[in-house]
Length: 290
Image (tube, rainbow, N blue to C red; front, side, top):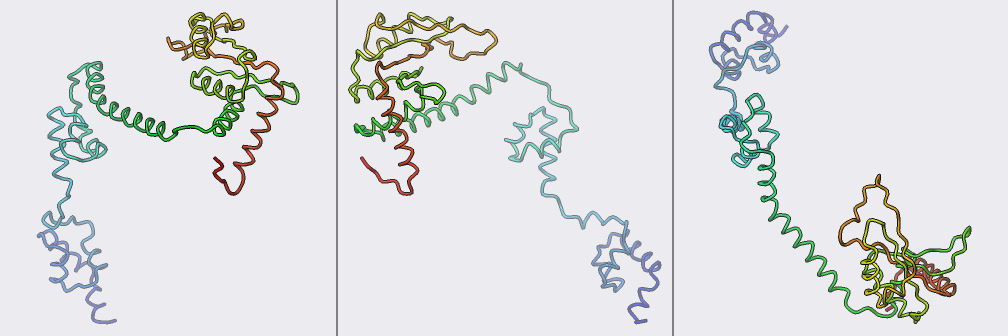
């Protein structure tokens, strides 16, 4: 057995000395130097269970924040107010002060809600301005539209919103239904481009019974440039009280139906053009053909 092993053989004696020194307030390094023990594993075993002296503990960087947070909470400040004051997370604040009583509510829920609403108003106003700016920029990017562009747009518009022929129900006729005035304006401009005479166009309104059908008919008639008497019979849809309809405000005018007489050939042209668009979009290389 080596001399070092002999020195460590009497573990109990060494532990008594190490514990005594620890309780006197010595650090591990001081005990190591005093007992000449340079084996860290053995050194830790000798003082196991003995807390280190206070002077050797490193200060916690958040101790001061924790104490300040508790102080502010006792002053009946909310988590939000403490966060603003100290710049730390609300999750940390919650851990530090959760044993303290909650501050007494000084405002009613309605008052607090109104204060929050006023605080959000500048943010919401800025967001709305940003939205409108993006929309204006996008509008200006469009510029003038060529006849080809309008034709392709109209084909896509119809294929999305118009009635379509089915193998089980042959409907080779052009019927377009929509509630968006902008969509109707684009579709009628497309009909003008194709030379579809006004005499071949038939108009109908579809609207819920709770709305003002007469006002809706006048609105759509003005939009397409005809008098309401030229419209076909309006379809009034019954209101289901179990459904939570959103289109019940003053701006609700139902849908306008535009049906083209003798339109089988036009329908076939639309369908063929749509397949052409799909094929061109699926091609490996897209060329700008304007």
